[in-house]
Image 1 (tube, rainbow, N blue to C red):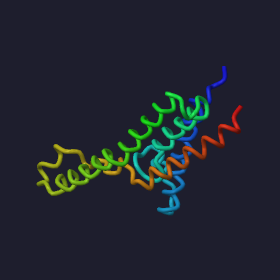
Image 2: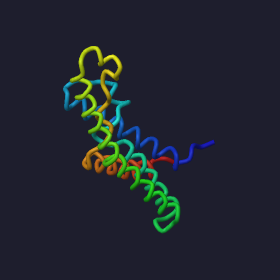
Image 3: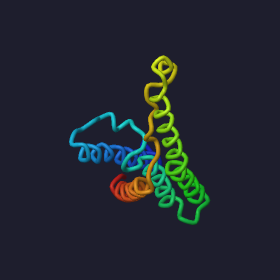
Image 4: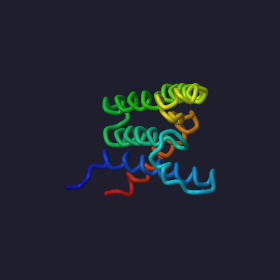
Length: 146
């Protein structure tokens, strides 16, 4: 049985974006850290690439005036808005909590996490690049895959 394009292409687009994140971080830091592949946040947004790819595939399959495409657009907007807004807000809270924990007396510190992950959201630029990767990779894969 052939794996349907509607599932395969968005997964591949998300993977392309996530692997791009490794490349960007390697260039930025000068060394490869494979842990980047499993981290939240960073350039580009693989979540955005995945949902925008799914939306693009639905548009290609069902048409731009279909109900399915409308639902996909709304789903994508909510996902991207969440990545840029709410998850960035949570990251700011994590940063503040880390500072507060750092300032605690030594006897109190064991009751709290050593470090809360602060980088879980995306900047608008990271989301935009993720969206462009999602659209471009989808269009390329759409015409390459049978």
